[in-house]
Picture: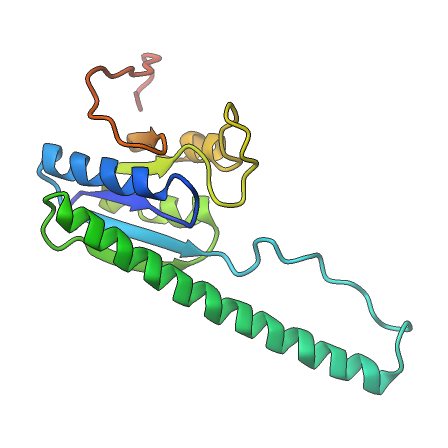
Length: 178
């Protein structure tokens, strides 16, 4: 498969910056652009509780059915939100000069899903933080370090607002992968 610029988007404050930097990189590298939204239906879900013994059998069964229906509804809403985010990213990239970016919505955890896409990737564009991270200005996102350690492709971590890059800093340790 053709190596492409892959931009991981979510509902964070960094999504527009990711779109703009990904469009810029796609044009600069003359590589196709793919926007990816990863739905992790288990993220943010409280740990399962042992309800055996605390409720009568009939009440427990009804509660479990309601919880299951709620999980199903949450997953459906997450997929629909992701679809809308991908469509908005596509419109923004086309306005920025990219022709026909690819849109992909995938299920899984962020890092594992991106690692699985690595062979298709020339560059990964991600925001400084995701939608579930603490919003303190100096902090990096919770997944970023693990992503950098596990990925073997260049990663462009971007701020909220696009500013055309004029300088670049490359970490090089002399290793085979560097």
